[in-house]
Image (cartoon, rainbow, N blue to C red):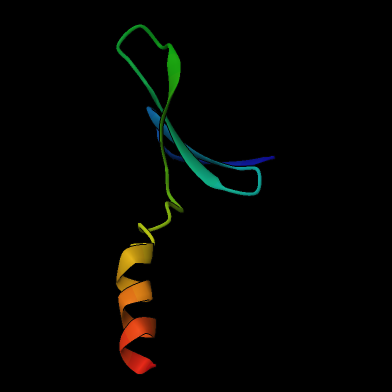
Length: 55
């Protein structure tokens, strides 16, 4: 895992998926969010409608 400090209170970590950690006023670090979030996949019902119309 590697870390990149963005500021005194924010760090990016990477372990197969980049993550942001932030520190609060007491210096306690906590996970904030993943940077590489996947977008929602299209619904399967839409794809099946497309297949039915092609037949």
